[in-house]
Image (cartoon, rainbow, N blue to C red; front, side):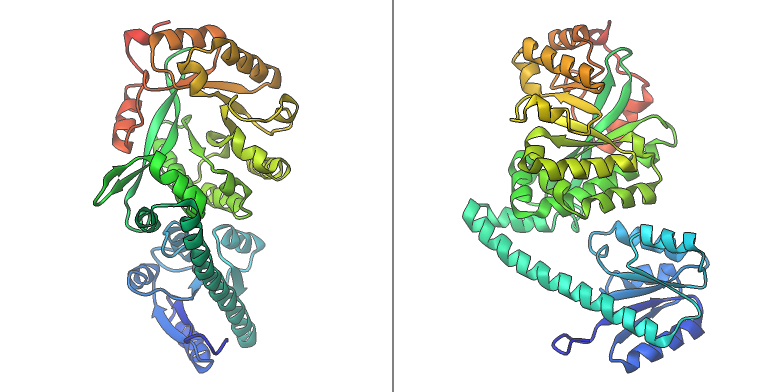
Length: 408
């Protein structure tokens, strides 16, 4: 261990007291600070007040298994980055792969060699502390970025705490099938209820998140929560889909694919019912790398939606290279009644063999026009504004959107 650091804290979770005693004795002699838990539930209670540098986690325990505990921890913004090493007698390759897919950094099979455990513990604690050191340096850099972009520092500092303080909420706006008026899915939209400022507009806080890099962690939280909500809806509405907005920096982040894959594994939702919305302008910042990332995401089975199409700068020849499944006609063309451009975009989508969503529909006239064009889906305040979970669930229970303005 590196001497300039205080002793590293290790949480050992195992229902067998002899195993806990053996590991704690071994590691304590090497200078580590040990914390013990004899069940997953006990570990959860300890983690409310203790933040270890590493968790040694048994798999097979009564009640909640180690796998289940790992899933819970990876959905907690405060605990998700703590490295987890599974220690288990389960040595089948499928068990090992499953452990890694849940976010564990290592998997040690019993009976284990003492020196092997120590070596792996040292390695992962060193990596974890290096990551934390880099995080501090990144925060210093973010302070400089705030000054450069003239960012509201108080709002930025509050935004840093918005996820752990549970101030962020996801609203859901229906995406409606034009042919039968039924809700095919929702777009997940982030909202922030500030304890002092009240409702903060996304126009005010999303740019701050994107400019300072906070969007990566916030976006990961949105993706996980949206997939979790979809899994709950699927118990009654198994065909429902959800669209999740992805910022350019998220898409280019090497860890983003793992975020989506972990969300799929944890929630069990079908990848084909997840649509990731990326704007045209975000793709063109680094086209080749963006295309590679999109291809990797499509290999997971998720669908890619090109958002705000028509207001960016990509050429039609490059659009053909984008691995996409859906094109959204930007609300600007709908609300300004620029039907010629809207129709051209629809014809382009047809030639590419992708679906079309017209967003920003607010009047009967606009709905009539997009229906005449042959758009597959519509979205906008004419159907419904973004709704909190309960109101969205109530809307689903109606089966379809009623109203004379929707009549064919």
